[in-house]
Length: 549
Ligand code: G6Q
Image (cartoon, rainbow, N blue to C red):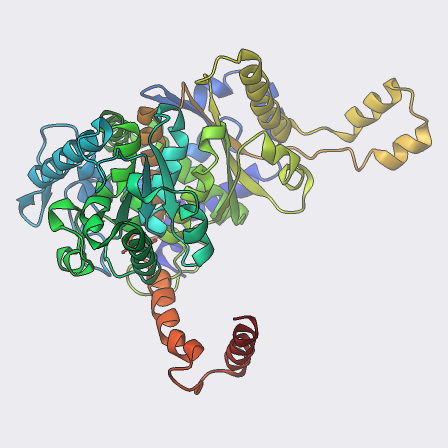
């Protein structure tokens, strides 16, 4: 057994779980009218109501003890102090420096990184303002109307999510597009109706060596050169990367390379120059408001006692369901159309960070780690997978994200949206007993035999836990808060599970494997040494490819 599962706090939680297991939240709410007051916290305008969870005050005390015994506070402070907590890559984990809005120095390896951070922010400001004001123009003198971000994974998902969330801040004459998949359909469909004279490409890649991004960038460059000539590249291509040499070799003027640093992990890089598309499309002031939101959450996380610390509470509840109830899945359900991409963004942030089975000492863990994350915007999701959440045989813990106000003045829509949000979390908590179903059906005059037949199907067990996060409005500031909230939640869970949340060897493996198979598919090298399935598939695909080309 590991130190974690043997620890007295873990053992105490295991015992406590037996007491909590039979309790129903419906009864807990009936007995205690102060549950909401007891189990809700606020941070700079965001509310977390976690009262609809299968917890008592004792549960929270024990979970907080667990966090303390796992040194969450100490390791959090080490992250903010620039320590190399990404041990397998021997790097600091310092995305918090990117949104440090104070005068505090942020030290890594004895150097304050803030002057560099501010220099790049100023460069982003100058460039984005030039483009937005029309001082930077395409090679033929026309204004830029479309910004195409070419990147994948951490160099794509956060930027798409943020821009989708902040779409209401977008001007009509400057819009973003994204190319990530190496499938040429993505490139071709994105470029299909674009005018090269008014298009600006951002090649966004930390390493500037990711196969998909480099091929997409090369094909996009050919598309441009074919239409406007080689000279056009310097007016229509900029880069975001940590690798100056590769940017230069690709043919992009390094004066228009926006750098960041190895202490920024890909999935934590939206705050860095990777967010250049955000600055271009909604303006640098709005980008900096997003940084302010991230900073506000950092300060909350850094300074609030664990008992009232929003990311810590969310992390501990996740541990409670994953490790003690044994549930493997967590759903994130935003009730705001602008946040539709948020669950997908979180999938990477959480599953790539905590999808690990080896602890920091190199041993396999004997407990479950990061859950499977999925989700979609309500109310649409209510008409698809919510059935399983209410009545399925799997249990899923859930975050509902509600937004009090809307950018659009159709109040009736907002009222119905919020009613659905409230109704779902209430129904998931309370359920509907068989007695209630019978009473309801007989009040409608249904014959007893039919009631007998229908009652079990129309009964809802309830006791399904939900967190309710409530934002005042989707703004750059609240988006910043929300992203940082989940980043810190994932961090705290990684600390408790004693894993490295900041490497991604599984992703690296994918990058290597495809490289080896490419020449076998093109026929440059013979198909040898593969297992029979891979060999069979290779041969079959090669045959089909020939037939269809
Ligand atoms: C993120 C991952 C991964 C990465 C992409 C793109 O944390 O490491 O999703 O962001 O593989 O990498 P580049 O930015 O180097 O192209």
